Image 1: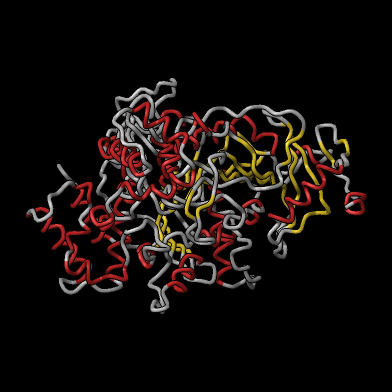
Image 2 (image 1 turned 90 degrees about the vertical axis):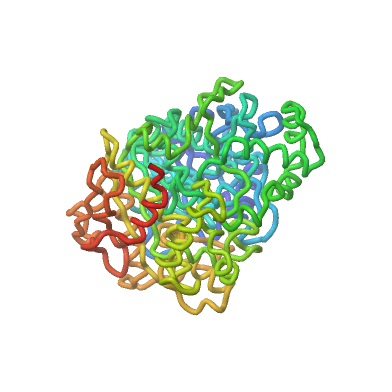
Amino acid sequence: MKKLFANTNVLLGPRGQRFRPDWDWGSRCLAALVRWSGGYAPSQMQLVEVQTKQGLLRGQRLTPPHKNVPQFDAFLGVPYAKPPVKELRFKAPQPPEPWEGALPALDHRADSPQFDTFITQKNVGSDDCLYLNVYSPQVPSSVRHPVEGAPWPVMVWFHPGGFTNGTARMSQFAPEHLVARGVVVVTVTYRLGAFGFLSLRSPKLPGNAGLKDGVASLRWVRDNIAVFGGDPGRVTVFGCSAGSALVEYLMLAPSARGLFHRAISQSGSATNQWAGVLPPDEARARAFRLGEALGCRTEDEDELIAFLQAAPTMDILDKSFDVVDPEKEGPKGLLFPFLPVSEAGVESDDGEEAFLPDEPRKLLASQRFFPVPWIVGLTDCEGLLTVMDDQNGAGRGGITCRRLDVVEDDLERVVPAELELQKGSPESKAVAEGIRKLYFKGGKVELPGYFNLYTDLLFTAGVTQAARMHAAHPNAAPVYFYLFSVVGGNNILTAFLMRSWPELKATAGACHGDENGYLWGRRAPLPPEPEWEPHSLEATTRRRLTALWTNFARTGVPAPPSDPDVEGVDWKPLPATSDVKAPIEPYLDIGVSLGVPRAPLWEERVSFWDGVFDKD
């Protein structure tokens, strides 16, 4: 230990003074590095320091394990709100408290409580989870001269996971390929499940705490990102799946207005049935069902809140899925017990402004949202997600392509619940018959039609409708639509699914979330990433995708003619038209090559769902 720190010198603070750690703090640093380095080479323990509004932070300069990828500064486990424990459980986030001395930011903090689907298959996490991670090409305080290129645009990432699980850790979201493009990256942990979305639809517990965490993280970015070399006037929020829907929720939230300037949504919308708001009565009923499942039978709000705020974290997690009926709810889509709610007509006791003043579709239809330049899109086979079974799947008791016979016997099971059609009614039967005709040519339910059906049912319908409603705003900002269709070695979720279901010999395209393997690096315990040849599909896709996303964060234009990595593609936004049923064109196909197809995206399928959801 003494020898290790004998050679440790680092420039810290605005005056560039050198710092030699004390032995106790040095021991903690080494322990932290052993826990989380995961393939990164610490640069001779090169510690870096920034002064935030709350106090002094000490981070670490890292060397990525890839060739020709530059070093960057990492600050992990930075508190952006007060720990939501005890009486703050389920409540809106409170501002972070200041600290004295230097706070080591060398280790990830706990994830939100969840069942870890992909790695440990166990309950993990803690109520004390409101932390974020900041990655900078180089913080200005670590050098004596101005940093070239700073201030950099900022990209704030919200992870996927159905508002039920997920992580902001570098194991899944290692930032080096984005940071190398000259951006500051922030990854956010927000509350999930009951901890983030329990609601009584009342002033005492209005709900949406997890979404309000997103606003709190953006306020922290606004107040602090400049000291990391970031530009608080160029903040792009981006996310995948539930994180993608959260991004759109931020565009609908009055409290988030002005905190970000651009947005990227990868495969998720606030209008998707799995991410949309619960009916008010159902949201309230689920809260009381959770209390009953844990042993508290009551109709009194105060008694229920006090009981649940004192209940053990893992007990709440274990009983969360008891509040829904898998047979009733599961066939309609991905089964998540706690979701966002409309706060219309509800005033919080703590004076917090309502995050969501109405249902997403109503806000979009009435143009009550904050338009910013937006990239939004899909993968070409989102429905591969249904390979997941009840044990490793996205919602216990939910959909799975492994039981096509169940759908064949009762196709009305997949008629969207938000249509509020009585099962067996002529209207419900007509929708089911239309589905059979379009996806199965009037015959038996089979793959790949099933994958296409769930691609559209779970993602395409909501995403394409939202994109056109955003484009129809009278003050519309550009809306760029894309389709990701690469099938390569970094399609991580596809690879996971094929291992879990060997019968799936080949895929029809890119699965939900597969583009993340090209935007982000990965670390243990996930399998190591090969060193791809420079002209391989994997390396080429990474160059293209990171260029498109970071160009957009920098200027609002994803494919400028001056960037050779986007190969001169002419990606224009959707037309600014009031026709919310217009075909999805132009759009960018991110495949083996970059191109703008001549035909609209899946015109027959998109038109079918437009008609299904048209209640006028």
